[in-house]
Image (cartoon, rainbow, N blue to C red; front, side, top):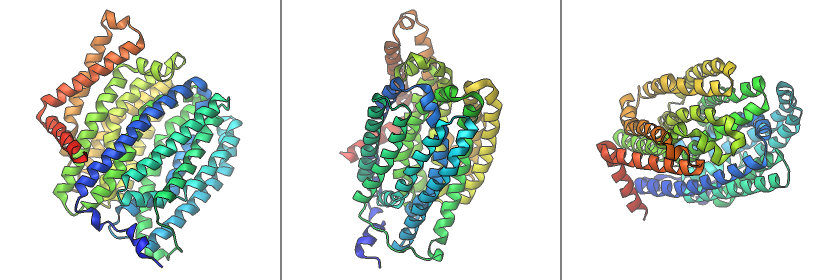
Length: 499
């Protein structure tokens, strides 16, 4: 039977009164933790790139594609369902807990026959043992899905940040120590498993809710339907989005895949470190505001505007100075990844913004439309990847990035803006100042790097100058445009709210 203690972890009525302040403070805590996480991750990335070979990263990347897909299957969109629903019972969450736990075991068992298949497909015998060992992580992480979802539902961002930060530190330290001791690609496997263990322990420690007996199917049918559409859309998107790594590994081998994987990590690292905390804050916030369309629109567009002001200048730096970035992060032995980084920098321009469109689908309970969009967008992505494959990893990166800017992004803005408070033109207005700043940043860096004095300097000095130029040009542009100037004032107001 549910108890008052159980209800305390499910109720959200007390959050509405000061939703704005909670969102700002929660976002600040989460962002602060993410900044520390980025610093640690960049440091570990630099260290591991010098301790491990491209082939080691390529081997694990071959399995990582499957891991990403099964991780989505294991969740089944049920964590989002727990956060999104205004009213949910202890019995329903208990049922979802046991579903997620069972799916974790099912994913692990599925990896057993898959180990032989992957080893045969890539002609890499080492993949058999790698796959079997990584399957253990699914059993562990399936036990914490609902606990972490309840922490997000309750907007307990400090606890979530602590769990995620602690787990990352333990996992990264484990990987570095193992790599230093000569473990090779096993260091990356230990990193994944130790992260899953720490996340599960942290979820149970900070969330006092404990599961009971599962309820009947009727009580969770709507939740499972919501999650199924989310999962279907995500799986289609992930399958197609990881098709590049699958085909590069199959067609070109472990070395080119290792280069592509590391280049893609430069892209994904800042995006994932922005997406994860933003989802944790935006999902419960927007879910509570669905009944207030104008406020919903204002809050969402405010997030998109500030996100683009943060991410797009960084993408411009990647596009304009990829060689300096590669030398700093990975060393001269990775210079072959430079053109891949440059092309994926164009994808970084739009991916953080298009990612937020999933919030609109989910918080407005439009997951069926989200599923349809996933099928359409994935078809375009598949065609672009296959078209670029004969030209190597660089060709895949270029084809994916260009079709995203020219086709997928504008069509997504139109599709998601057909219904709901946020219209297609709202997206354009929100990102225009950042797009203008990005163009000016690329032109400025190209001019600077062609100056004899800077061209003769070392890559560290050149990258420092490029970074300062990026910050100065972005600030001047944002301060000079009325729309982005108002956003800077909003940031100052949020800082005052935090402190």
